[in-house]
Amino acid sequence: MSVDYKTIFWPLLHNKIRRGLKNHTFGMVRRHKTGATKPHQGWDFEAATSAPFYAVGSGKVEFVRSHGDYGLQLCHSFDFKGQTPYAFYAHLERCYLKQGDQIYGNQELGTTGESGNARGAPKEDQHLHFEIRTTPTPRSSLLDRIDPVIVFGHCPLTIGVAG
Image (cartoon, rainbow, N blue to C red):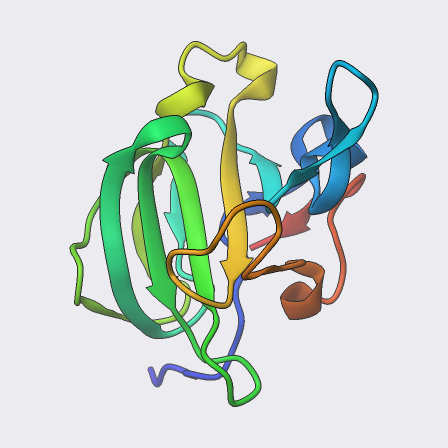
């Protein structure tokens, strides 16, 4: 079987935004206690602990690390319309790869978890935090990040998409 290296894949077997709420999507969709808007840098997909997650495209692992609010994280490059964006996955339980490993689209990369600030989340709030970045290590807020809808064509806010 040949691998199509230009195909984009979804990161989970079933892809739906957590609780079907817009504040788990990309952009200025969250609120501070004062009511002022604040950013969310990616999509939070509903994902029970230990669910497999997958490469959205072929590329190279840029890093695997455990740090801060994101907990265990993996970032990989991939090809999209002649450019090289980066897929970022957070709150992981396990990663099967290391920095520098070559990967192919739809390759299983590890399992989702409750690391970082997702530790101890109720079952209905367990999730995979997912971003599309223009650099592996972006600046704060929404800088160096793009809305995943640009890559996937739509946001699975109310209806899940099979991977």
